[in-house]
Image 1 (cartoon, rainbow, N blue to C red):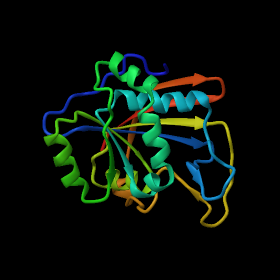
Image 2 (cartoon, rainbow, N blue to C red):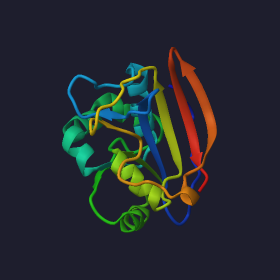
Image 3 (cartoon, rainbow, N blue to C red):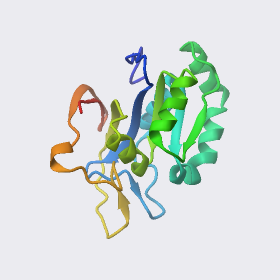
Image 4 (cartoon, rainbow, N blue to C red):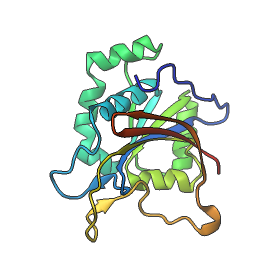
Amino acid sequence: MVYPNLKFPKFTTCPFFYTNFVQTVDGKVAVKKEGYWPIGSKTDHDVLVELRAYADCLIHGKNLSNEFGSVTRESLNESSFKKIRQKLGKDPILPYIIATHDLKELTRQLHEKGYKHVLVEGGPTLLGSFLKENLMDEIFLTIAPKIIGNEANSTLTLVEGYLFPPKAIKKLKLLSSKQIENELYLRYKILN
């Protein structure tokens, strides 16, 4: 495990939101053409599973769900994943939600259901919306040792659909960094 004994703050008025992404050295999280996925290694995929195991709820946006929803549901139902969750003292079933409406209302509903730690896997448009609403608390980011390049409208970055004004640019504090082979595993707290 890259993040053994992971601890998150417990908020009393809303869930703690965290996200997990992998990006290339040149900042690409996805390519809109076949043949580029996966961006990260098997270790990066293991981190995805590990961070899911710590969550009380998993959120995808509708685009990510349309592309990977069936694969995600299958992986959440694997007995090996359920055993990891049980070992962490979690319910073996991880609720999977597709965010399709107002994020403040969704936050209220998640809090009412008692979800303390919510993993938002995105995609980049949903992450941008969470950041814009100041709802995201931490980012787990894998830097894959690749450079993909770009053509017009062919790649996505970590945040899509919103450019933060200069006075509202998100600032981060590095909480941890680990190198495994040629990949970097970074954990950031969002400061504003």
